[in-house]
Amino acid sequence: MLGGMRLTTLALFALIAAPVGAAPSAKDYTELPPGRYSVELQGMMSTVCARAIAAQWATIPEVEKAAVDFDKGLAMLTIRIDKTLKVSVLRKALKQAERTANLGATYELRDIHYLPDL
Image (cartoon, rainbow, N blue to C red; front, side, top):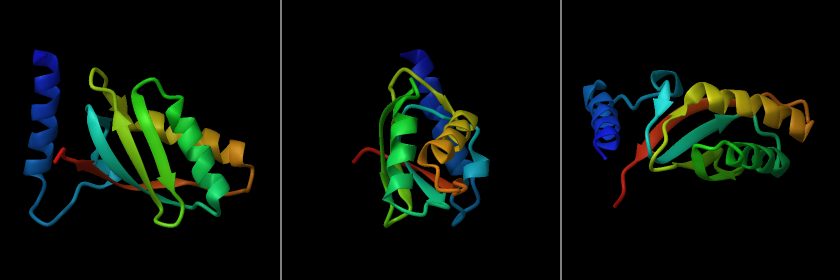
């Protein structure tokens, strides 16, 4: 429990320490502590791309749930309560999804936003 609190505190500190009005971008994150995130994606060509990304991200052990909306260019990720996910793992899985979709698309993470529980 203490370790989880520490991660949450660090995540909140990172968000608070960001300049006012500036949301953290994908390059500002190196790890995602437990919680829900909105991930902006670029480069999807069709719903085939969205399905390939969601399926690939769902195989990552730290990911509890992954859904991708092609029309909005957004993914919703839920990181397991007892895990922390490295953003580099998401990027690597995106490359695998590119090969799986086989459409010649190149996917890119744009912005990552923590979604606090309401």
